[in-house]
Image 1 (cartoon, rainbow, N blue to C red):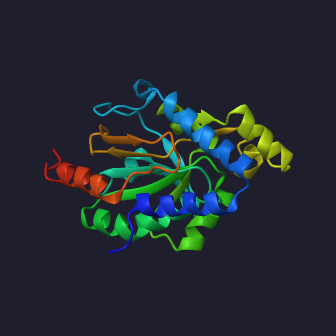
Image 2: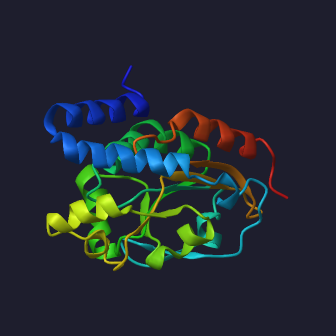
Length: 223
């Protein structure tokens, strides 16, 4: 049996403990801990909420409206940070392996969503040969509506600046804002049926709870 997503991300952290400078590791760990401690679930999109339409930009070209995503069945949105994010490069291949086939069988549409601009975001789809859609949430518009954005703390920003880096240049957004990893499932009536948000980006949703939630939806025939 292949490793769970939790195990794969734990391996990433263990490698960092072995190889990273302790001060850099502390900044990373402290930032993730702070995000968990200050998380306010009341701000997040809620189960039972009926959504207004939105449009994402497919990295392969064209628009992905909510209506289009719901044409075949439920829509499963997986929010991730950006194409070069190490944890995202573990999570998305895991979803390709363990989630995408089951969702296709259930008639659901899976789309991975990041604020990174399409011309830079397409790299992660190509690198891993992802069969599902990858789309840009330009300006973090949907992430903001869903209440899942965060801004890096001062220690994290200073560490990036010291390396001559700025996440806003990497993503093309020009800001420090990124989405917290999240899975949102939407049914044919545009009602949110499942939400899982993780302030700690090394903790992400496993495949089975998502498949179970979609199965529950597809057992109820559309009106």
